[in-house]
Length: 435
Image (cartoon, rainbow, N blue to C red; front, side, top):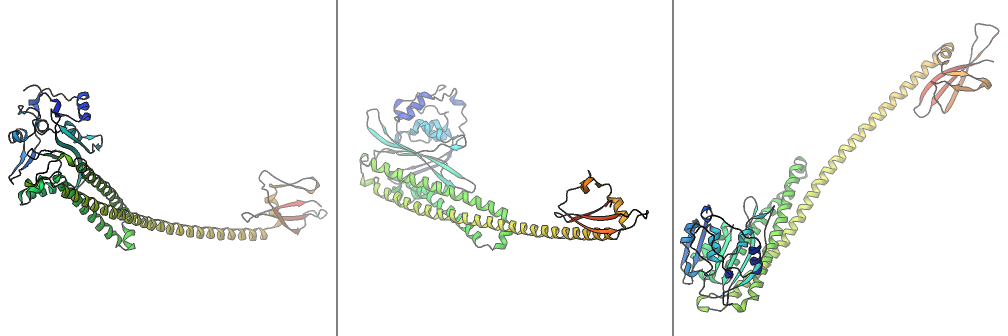
């Protein structure tokens, strides 16, 4: 009991699984040290209408409750201390790759669909084994439900279904069907898959209704309300857009899984031996149910695409409102800037007028003394600028005649106004030209 049980070759007929086990073995040193805290619910449905339901079984309780005679002889069940996954693997033939799928690879779950025919040691085809995943929407996030099945090709042999993370609504639906008069519906090949897919489609439609109602509430809001909570509204709309895209992705998964199940039934229809007495081999009804489910999901996808378009329209409308508000603010800023510029221009004009009047009434001798530093007299009656001078584009002047102290020397004072046209600031200076 201290050593792990020997795995028989017939337990793994799928080449990919065999190669994986040979290349990446998972040795366990002490099988008795495993915690065994996993709890399972089991439901057994018999062709005579008898059902057996066990809930929240631990590893040892699960092993003791298994009807070993009705199971495929796939390995030893002597190790009562083995964990639940090992027991399911040894008793039901569930491949180890199924349990590897339950763990995430990085941040992404391991998903995929597969189907293969299990054979006995003498080469006889005994069952159809497969694996796939569906999603269910709870109050917080989408969770994957992993399904492994072994559909027996012999009507008197047991068909096994192992589901991890099954939605409570799906589990309740299957249980109610098993307890009712139509219990034989569960005995049809792939009937459990139809129940799972139908329950998943219902969860998609419920999610669609929730998103549609929230979008409609935004569409009925007035423009004044948008201006009050623009930031929160954009966040909410982006969250709705993300939920819509997830809805579309999961709807596509549901449709592809249904098509995968229909193709599996069509491909292996000749492997099933009909038994009308047990009403066990009603394959056509299952395919019709799955085909109808695909049609419903297609309609849901079309409606969900309109949701995404409506969300984009609302987001664009909010951004337009924000842009218009910003444009109005920019216009107010431009008006204020213009007013400030006009006021500054008026102040400059007043200062220019005051300077001109002041210079006009000052005595000419005083003007000459003030401006003597800036302008010097050079030969040939040319004016040159001092270091403190500035280039001006235009000269305007007026004659001012006055008498100096000496009666013999008469000077002509020429008052020069230098005007800088760019800023309209007038600098007055004077020079004296000797006659």
